[in-house]
Length: 53
Image (cartoon, rainbow, N blue to C red; front, side, top):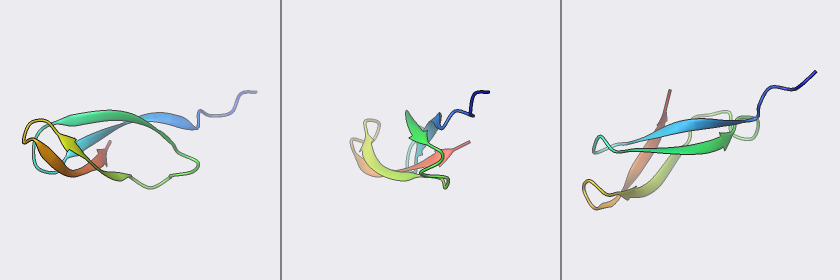
């Protein structure tokens, strides 16, 4: 019987604009929601991106 998939696709939403990134994460290693600092092309600077459902 196959195990549940460990890697899932998550949506990262900018804290300052409507821009969104999609990335993969391993749910076994990172069960909490992730928060990354990435470049936002809408406002042209780096901002925090938080994982959404």
